[in-house]
Image (cartoon, protein in one colour):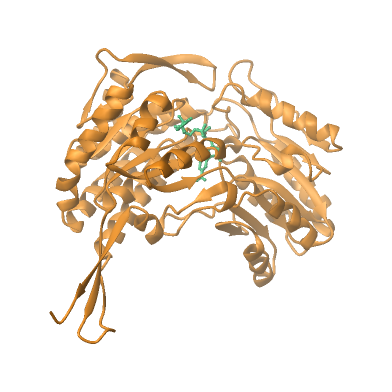
Length: 491
Ligand code: NAD
């Protein structure tokens, strides 16, 4: 084990030794704070409790972030890039070990291999934004006689980062990395369901940037988020989570004209065209549907299959779904782990029952489930009504809702109806035709013959009920930059 790997295991151990979800000015806090219990989805039992903050800590956090902003933003881009790359190196070291991936798995229920991949992806975000800030140049125009106009980028200010439970490291990474690259400081509220995985990231970042640049407080949103939305120094809010909460955050941020990046729910169409290889399409859907135990914002939600390949596709997908072993996400042979929120298996059962009442046929729902924990069986439905909630709303679980189509225009009409617009998928052998259908999807990110369309160097973002703004790529950096045009005249 090299020394970076060694230190990462120690870092995780030290964060877990005194669990707190409050870090201000580079120091963990727990004295005198309330504590909140954390539940492991795989057995439904309380595994630890964690210190949480309130309005006093939230106010202190934003003061610390505002105080350190001038110092951090004065660092040359190369120096900021160097710090981001050091974070990336440590993330890569941790991805090869058990400690941090095991913690992510314990908190979220995602399979261990996916937890390792999440750390690897997070490292890519830090590297991509290090490169982007180092290569960003000011723009100069000499179009007006006697004048030159120079456009310079600076930091937007303090950025409030609010994240969900389902990717507790990579979603904070894709917000915090561009904010730091831009020279911003950050106040960070992780999810109450999986805070410890996020706290390791906060502690890791503190090793490489001055204390106070990233200040973390978990607590009741009314105590923590509202003060940030009301604070004049917070100039941008980056939120990922449900559409319901996104609306509240957008309304709060509007009062002070804070810039918002809102990455919300999705209802991704997965279109299998008549010329698709049905078995290859079924393999692609296995990834697009069951990634993160079905709890991903870009999960395939409305599965639309052309009639000529429908039987073969459903047979291949149903067979692969039946083979998934449901169980302990730390066991490498497990195909599907538990759901994080305790109530979600019951929510899914209700969705499926309502779809069946609307005429859907159940093709698969028979996995052996462990006796404890928040498990849901992989479920495959066909003949799903376009009006069923399972088809029109985000499922966020291992239920596949399939519908056969004769006419692609009619199939896409149902998709456009939902109002969401985050991700979409198309499978077909004529790549130009598949890409053309992809362009017709209401989606900011489209996978053609792939279930993994996301790449940190490219923008990721939705429209409509899926939110606004971008993460990833140059667009993700510019969300946290303020631009100044300096006109040099003849004087
Ligand atoms: P959630 O909306 O319940 O919670 C997200 C965050 O908001 C948490 O930190 C939570 O504490 C906080 N929050 C809750 N109430 C709040 C309030 N009134 N004011 C401010 N903050 C508040 O979402 P979740 O269950 O953690 O995550 C699942 C959702 O996130 C799904 O809808 C999923 O599609 C979405 N998601 C979207 C993306 C994307 O990139 N578009 C990625 C992952 C998840």
